[in-house]
Image (cartoon, rainbow, N blue to C red; front, top):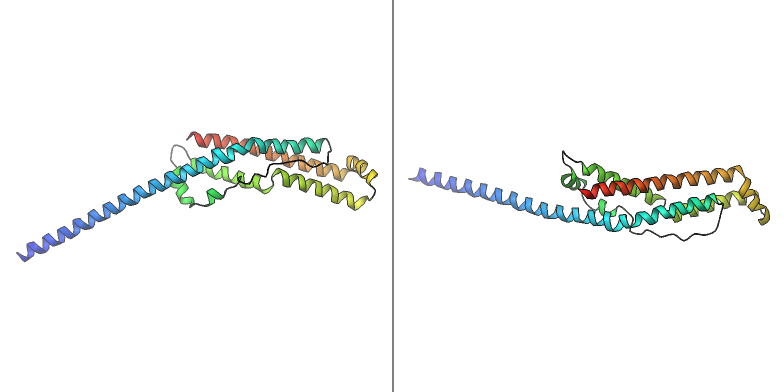
Length: 194
């Protein structure tokens, strides 16, 4: 009888352990799914409602710099600040969570997400207002080095090889950013299609 009691006790303890383990795994899986849905919703909202909304204006601002430089204008330009254009929401979560959410053998949305936030970080390094301010500073610094008289500054600005090189560098840099904005828009559209 005591052998039967021990076997029953062991069986009950084993079944309780298995039931506890299964319920613990199930609860963990449900919590992960709920958390992953929240992360996915946050990323989708950020890309669609924040980043997506800023892309047209960002592209227009870079193009405005190009036109201004090509026309050799040195006046001030008003730009949007793009405070919300950043990758902070992406950095707030664990990359392995993004892998679990977005990687599949059919479509690797994880790779696309990484590319999207890499471009966002690249564009954030030199927003239009910073690029234009850097351009004006660099030109003025060059002019200050060589000329003190205001009436000769404009002629020098228009004919100097160094000034022309500075203009060409900033135009090329802005064009690169315009193409990156276009690529970012394409990647976001592709990513949001699911």
